[in-house]
Image (tube, rainbow, N blue to C red; front, top):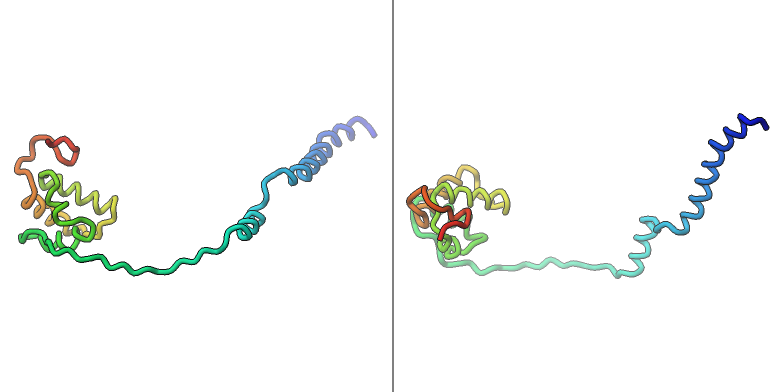
Length: 144
């Protein structure tokens, strides 16, 4: 064999052979396949069966004070909050209530339609609101 063929063999054949040996040896030491893992876990863990449970929560008898927007609050707020919990919040301006309502819609998935946000904010601003737009904000936890 001439020198050129030796170089070709060294460059191409040697890495292929080295890779084949590494694959055979490595398959013994590498983690098992996903199928083998699933089979082993199925043998170790018995199947789990779930049943549906119906829960009936008691309805609250306390409603929001009457006023324009109380029906929106009674329909949307009391599904997650008690009336007292909402009314005991620090006094906030209408714009601060709107921020809170938008947070409930965006972060917590409150089903309040977008066209009712302003009306609910005005209502909550009337029943539990501060009159001035100036001063520390309860939304930023700066109110005393």
